[in-house]
Image 1 (cartoon, rainbow, N blue to C red):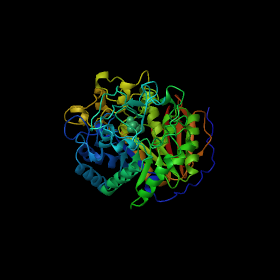
Image 2: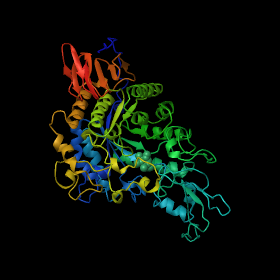
Image 3: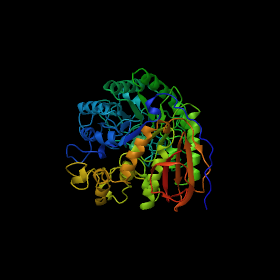
Image 4: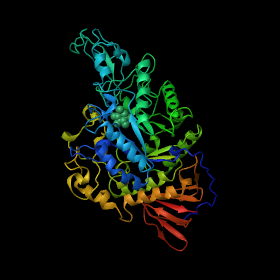
Length: 547
Ligand code: BGC
């Protein structure tokens, strides 16, 4: 049975300002896994530069590049030993410079990742801290509990599993140390032990980061993705939580180590710094907050420009939940005058075709979700390989895994190597065109058929769907603009959201749904069938209409 779509006129949604980031589509490059130019099996900056035409052709506005700084790579580069140097694995500083220039030449902006919550344990500050220097105050060192200080100072757990504290050796006064067992203090690391948390109460820390931001802004970057932007400030007295499995509470409740009100002062100071530069340089907070309202605090007018909307990423393929999350996200960011961001996948989560149900249904839903996301007001993030419809790799052998959480967690799922497998560029050849000498994580053989080469020019391929969607979005700037959508009445399981002169219908059900034809098809993730004045929306598909 068909129900009629309501004919309520969609609200006019004026574009608020000319700010590029409000509706930008930003492509995430996970540097190790994008393109390897020097044949060491690991992606690098030159590889990215050589593949920039793919991104320009795809039609994105900007590229966000994950950390490429000098690092022992204990956590894929999120353990930085020198914030102003490029790790030799990824190239040289001149490669970063060339990359930024070439991106700008192609009309792409560049956002780099900054990791302020923690350094590497090989950062000169931490080495000096272990040796008893004044840099100890830049980190969180505390005496342990128990008769001999043999117990961690509190019950906080690392996001990667296990205690968030490691006992350090006692400095011997000569710049050396004794053994850790010999009664040393403990240091805090909310992630791996190789990632000691910085003490943001110390002015030297904020001064250093302001200088690091300036370094990259002077080089020409257009902004920063701020890693763990909710983590830099810890609750006074570092109180116990009293509960286990704290990683599962992240993003669901405020914990004494995350989303503390004090972090906002840091973001305000960074906004002032960014605003001091020409050309709308932006800050994007990777902030896990329990509600859309608390997340919106990070994007108040004097704070960051955007924050990732993980509520959308976490939402299951359920029309009511999706609508709720979309409305709540839009309302929360509108209340502070910021754009909402939309993201379906990144380097920390299971790729969304697999999350939505592996196999053909998962891919159909992922394609439909992409059109739904790109029809929403605000900015959208695309994770490399998403435009190829890549699934999670779920059968990596243990011996190739590198995610530190795999080695530390007990009984947790969600290890992150499966979404980080290097992407396929060509049908055949070494690592499907990723590089000339294999890839640091093995690609499934079947990925040749998902490669850029195999999908280019193939009508209906996921790559051509993304290209077409981004082209339509550019032709209709109203698509990303505004801060609200109008939901039209639609049959059960169908979402129908209208914008100015535009409609997106998403059939979330596993069967065809028939409707009166609402307009002219602009694009569809399925192949709608037309009858006498009616359209049959395929199962798990989205269609864009001009109305
Ligand atoms: C990054 C992760 C990283 C963690 C610690 C995150 O939010 O996205 O990949 O492991 O921060 O830096």
